[in-house]
Length: 263
Image (cartoon, rainbow, N blue to C red; front, side, top):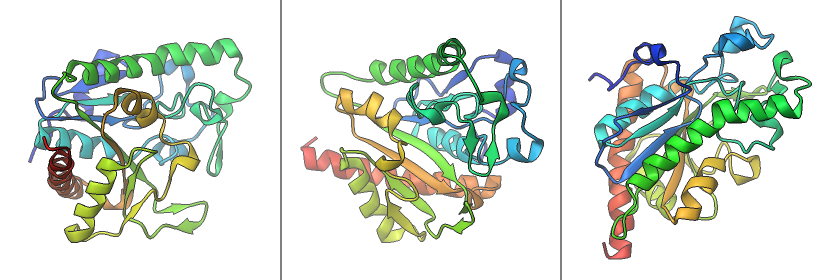
């Protein structure tokens, strides 16, 4: 089972955001805010070593591969960031300290220390605005009087954080609109075969709902954020398996929500 686009096939464009399967006709739009660990040359290595830059602090390992395959299975567009979350975290508002973190878990990030307002604004313009614009365009192009797309964001998380092991395997996250999350949880909990929990390992109190709050809630779109523990999507076989699972249960959840609306 081959993905639509491999990571190295997008590197030549120089763009900070990519839209994959842009003409996808499904009722979903996918987003992957932490798809890449790439750092533009002008930022060097942000003062970090290879161990840190390969770890979950720089990106969500496996998330892009799952999202790309999910886009193929659902025939949905996928908007993915192509720059490390350490340069700018596209799932954070510009005023949030962790939009350009000076510390991430165990690591200090020297290249983010002492940024001026002008430097922060430059990163917002260079990295966040293109992602915001691409996702908004994908959503708006699929919004009609009779049909609203559903926004699904794809993430992964580390099995051990600050020395604490996490038992949850798939997290289904939501802010104040839980309709799609409720349906997805009901579906996953009946036959997924994984430890699935609501708003774990993160929830609204952790400031991780920015994309949903910014893009879905104002448009009245059903939405959900999916977190997969990254040891479960460490290779292509696992990634394909999780993508198939999520495609199946998202399709069932979408049908359930539409039935409740009489669509």
